Amino acid sequence: MSYTTDAPAVLSVTELTHNIKAHLEQAFTRVWVSGEISNFVHHSSGHMYFSLKDAGAQLSAVMFRGQNRGLLFGPMNGMQILAHGDISVYPPRGQYQMVVDQLQPAGAGGLHLAFEALKQKLAGEGLFDSHHKKPLPKFPECIGVVTSVTGAAIRDMIQIISRRFPLSRILLYNAKVQGDGAAGEIVAGIAYFNSHQQFQAQSTQTHSEIQPCDVLIIGRGGGSIEDLWPFNEEVVARAIYHSVIPVISAVGHEIDVTISDLVADMRAPTPSAAAELVVPDQATLIQTLDKISTQLPSMLTKRLNDTRSKLLGLTKSYALKRPQLLVQAKYQYVDQLNDTLQRLLSQKTQNSHLLLDHLTEKLMLLDPLKILGRGYSIIQNDLGQIIKTTEQVVLNQSVHVTVQHGTFDAKVEKIHDIQTKK
Image (cartoon, rainbow, N blue to C red; front, side, top):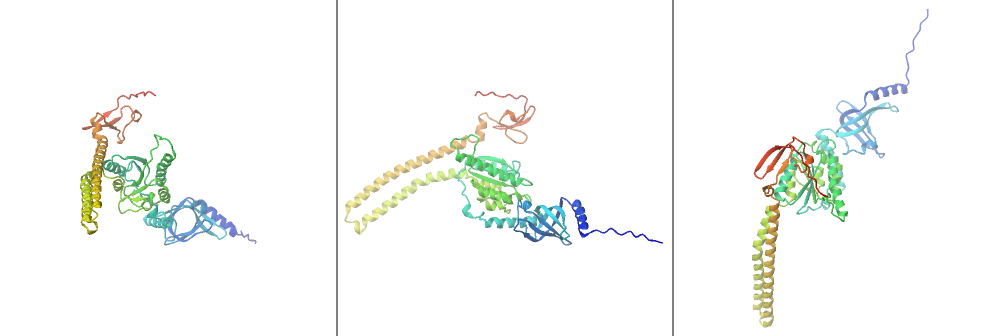
């Protein structure tokens, strides 16, 4: 009687490991894993080695130099993060690990750690130093604003600037202010205004489409730390730092402080506050001119009287009792000085009145009600955009018309293009 024994299949360590590797790497690709960073090492080669752990397990991870160059924050031990990548087996050690291609802070706690890490890094480079801060112009002719065209922030700023100093014009660069791609659009807006500024400085001729701005405002209304995060990204901070145009950062509410606030030439607690800071108040300017015109005569008269009193005192002094001719010459000099000052006083007062009249005329010309009173009107589409050309309307489109004493709605029935002679 004979027995046949089937020998069990025997795998080498290498074969088994490669089988495990094939199964794991096929089953776990492009996965997101949340955990806490520990054992973090940023190797001299540029690669990052660390572990991801939670209460029940630990996972080795690596992020190679090519992927971690674009990180906008510095990973550190204890930081809660979200990691994206593939599971891989390292056969020489028989270990599995995660090859990470994306890394981002998890939740507000992680964002706060990332904020502090970037803040410390940029402070060490001197980006927050006060001697880098550029002064703001007192009377800006053009104000560039980088924000969302649909947000409440831009509406508030336009209203306040127009009320306080209508001589300034506002140029808006429409940019996302939260979510993916927002930081890049904010950087593009800053670069846009700076490129126009540099072009104007190098140009010997005036170009109608180049409108250099004297100051920039970047910002948005309030929100969560996640909503405001684009203003905490390093690329935005460096764009503000390298801007040749002074930048006001106006992000969120008064309690919100972002990296942009620290780098900017001035921080405004809100967008509305930025509008108050960027331009003077025309009413205050007019009051100041009136005050100067009123006080100048009395100030000059007091100065003349003080000088005359001093000279009279000198004539009564013992040292000058004898040289009467010297005293008489001083009297003559005072009379000449009095005549000169009276003439200058008259000219100064006249010039102040002329300047006041000139500013008043400019303000009256810019009054929208005056323009509407001459028969003009403002036509807007349903989005509130002002219609300037026939290319902005279509047949049967509803429009909103504002005239001097009210508004009414209308519909486009015909479109006529006016042919201009060249």
